[in-house]
Length: 210
Image (cartoon, rainbow, N blue to C red; front, side, top):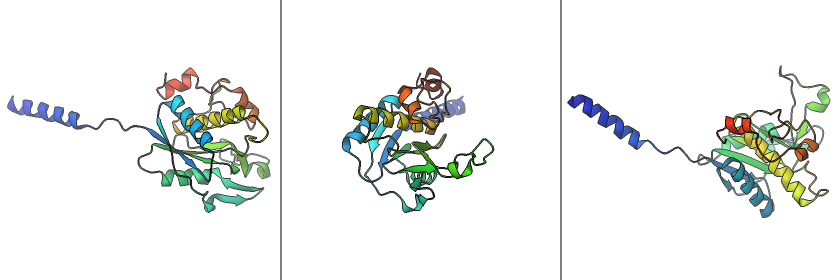
């Protein structure tokens, strides 16, 4: 009995010493300068969508190693998210890179082959890219027509794309629901304008937000 009581007491002690679940924190990494209003808006959006603490990191220059000039001067999104993952502070759960420069990736089919025509898709400009699942993503404002659309639409586009890429980090794949922010953009900004800034019930349930 004494040994049993000792073991039970030891187990209770071990459980009581367990740390509380680590708070999930998203870090926004601005590449070069961004208006404070843009950063504050994105910080608020990500917090409201996912309930995580969101912090804005000190701006830094884009890494030269990610630069390419295949069809036009761009930074490879796939390189950027790898760099972001490898340099992410331990205090952060996820990191979202934000840049005004054009970013690109290579579009492939389900077998890993570059889509045709290869010349078009080898270095394909994108709004954003994120590991699924993973710890990092990157978003570019280059294709959001900041100068030709009103400010409200620009902020809406940025919010939707950023929420979408962070959703990938959390393990959400593209969603067939046309009202869900995880819908595939299908290579057009029109899809982003038409989709709502929200997760559908199924996607919310997958990450425990329902």
